[in-house]
Length: 70
Length: 513
Image (cartoon, rainbow over all chains, first blue to last red; front, side, top):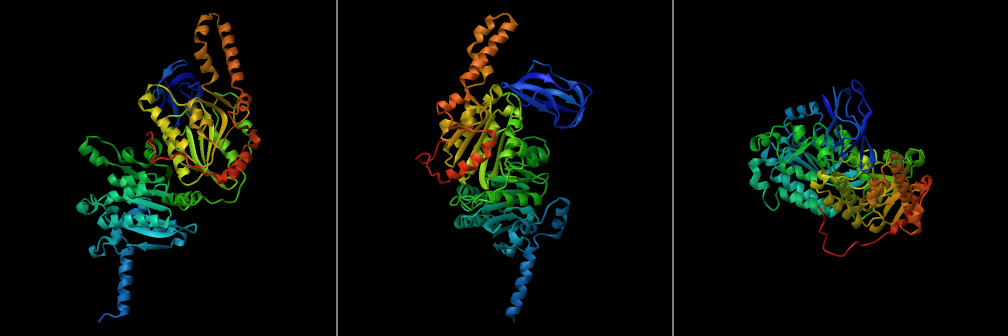
């Protein structure tokens, strides 16, 4: 199990993946908005999306879990 | 009766004995650990594997401590004289006795006298506790090594290659060097070992967690270059040195000019939309000589890129925001990373090139509690006091203190130039309109009308900060076509060569830390 966390405080713009989807290391899984910038959050590892913990408009802090991979 | 031939034979015997280092079983272990014997490291490091060694017979009377566990030598790298200290991990795990320390101090003193770079090939378990009174507390004890490093800092390049542990006090050798190469899986650095931590504070962690190479190169920032093998570290050090002069008394040497590896136009790399990410490495590759990029702290605070490069053969230090990572926003670690790199370049007459696309410093309680204000001040102090040629290029945007951090006009860059699409402002249009018209916006109930109002105000704002307005007011020194950026930079660097200034007359600054 691997958790993909937010790299900085901000607001979720959109979640780019869906449950059950296979992701490769380097794939953008969530778009975050912070400091008026579009921040791509990438997966560091390969895996399958098990849980999506956030939705658009939600505030997250640095280190908050966004996606859980299997 | 002993004759000269006997003495000669004895000498050869003794020398070979010392040359072999420690017991064979320790040599056998090295291969399985992906490690080289110290003298094999030196064979790869020095030109033709040749060096002059001092203190070969240190502690010879002890019989089982050849060279007292450290090789101190002078030799050449690319034809340039360098001093080297290299621990021998086959001798009591490379630990330090009294003569080990004295040898290290002397090779440092040699580097100071000769005004040449010094390399520390570290692979040591630390102090020999049994010998502590002779090597720890005294005036020429281990502390003196660090005192000397501080004295040598900026005088000559100091390079650390971490091949194994650098424990406890020994951990300060890498800490005082300009750059640290760490071999993944083997290099480690910590004040207290996991075993000590368990005994003394009750913490249970692995070696990698406590002080592994990867941890230091990504999280703590104590490591600068993570490598996979010793050969890669040695090759890296030999390459790194080509960007630097022998000492602060000289400038780095020019090399043959090479065209950039990338011909991709900057217009295709940089989006018009100020908020969309792009890859700053692509810009760098379009500007610098092919193959000339030597990145420092690549894995640490990747939202800021710091690296040495060449433009038309001339060494330059690049500090660039990376919009792809955290929007290119500056954080505590990026501020520290930038400050150190600026100081490194300024110490050795390497011109600084700032490539700005920065929305500002991060905000929020987390970074405030980390002291982002004083870390940002550290970065700005380093940049302000640099007296090497300093060029600021506004690649896309520079907002607020981000403009300041990237050598904006008030900080005496030799020039501050912008691409035609650049935006320089206290903050971006969205944030500004929010701030100034917040009451008015809330009064408008109809969403369509609200949006139209916001768009109108944002456009007004963009007009207000139009780059030609800034050029008209001499805020920036020039607007540069993206296709001409490399040649403009090359020309300006050439013209700035004679720059000669003192920043401030005083004993030394009260530096924000």
